[in-house]
Image 1 (cartoon, rainbow, N blue to C red):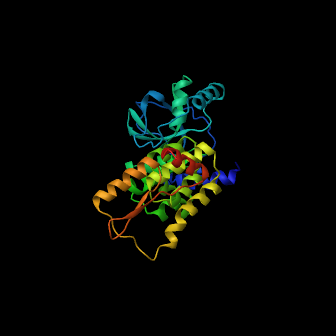
Image 2: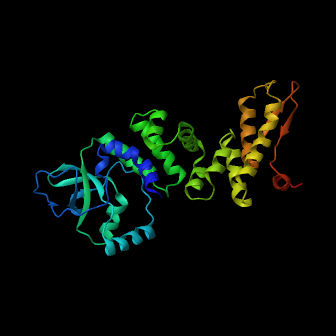
Image 3: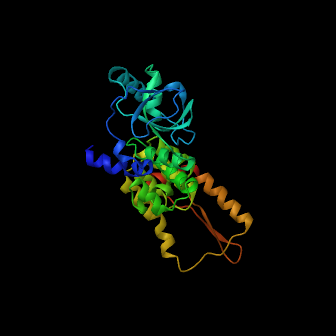
Length: 303
């Protein structure tokens, strides 16, 4: 990654720190910040005891890859910690982590007793915002983690979507696309998180109103290894009949009939429709997504 790109990614965090000129490659400061030190330089890198640092309670990331952590710890043993962490002073005996939990954890594994750190002053909202922004800027972050971080910034930092976009250097449509992922069923969110489907697959599922239908298509994506384009075509085909009949609204069904319709939809994993006539007659409509899907439904009907 070029220096210019790194600078662009870091603007949101640097702006919050209000000290961007201090974020330089680490140069060791021989002055240790001990528990007896009354003050320390806010514009320099200090050596702080690991035992005096507590983890940021606002850290949005809870999943740390063990092998990657071990690799980083090995690197720290050989070369030291290149990039300092950022902390805030709580009192003379304690610091609180603002950003760099992965580096902090790896340093403990490596057996360090002190760690280089920038010391900042920040209130709780700034702490959360800094941690979230640093988290979002990670290259290996999955789409659900990004979406959850965006949602926390909106809810807990009282930001609007435009302000959030400015903080993380993303346009509003990108922010919106991530947030919409959180409206998908938990099973699909977990699949995005675990890398079983891509964000493109997930975005294609969002226009489908029925969660049962979303879950079926999701299962079909994984079983058949469908491309994003194929899923988009399936969703368009699924919605086409609804578009054609938009002018004529169906008669509302009773609670009992709605229950039957929902039970059938659950049984066949598709959006079953009951169409009732004026004389008590009607039609059961069972849509299918492909020839294989039709075969699955016919097999369930013992056809």
